[in-house]
Length: 130
Image 1: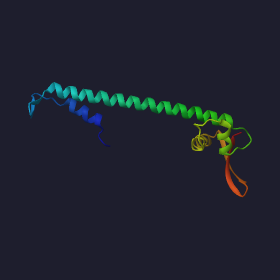
Image 2: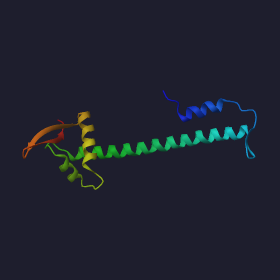
Image 3: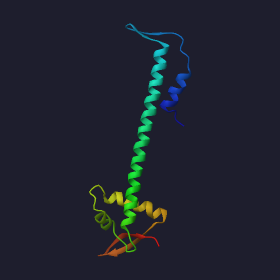
Image 4: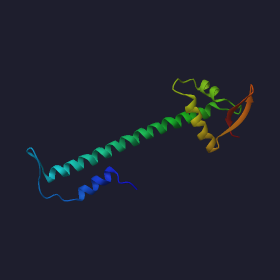
């Protein structure tokens, strides 16, 4: 398993620095500077991780809402993806998003997917599982 930045900063925070380090050009780093740097970076990593988790939760909630909307649109009559997108009538809803939600619903057993020949082409149609 790879060592993360946070792991490395945690390890550095356990190291004791007893003396100042002269970097030249009148730049001196004190043990307090090093400790402050480590703590600041750990705090930044924590903040970034929290923001990423919040954004992920927001995306999941939006996906759950669309999944419910797709399921509510379906009935016992099989529908093509294009018909479902048209029935939802939202410019933000694309065929790809609907197909992703339909796949989730098929995997959960809420929706049934069938192959149907229409005009010589085999298309996928979806309906509520009974």
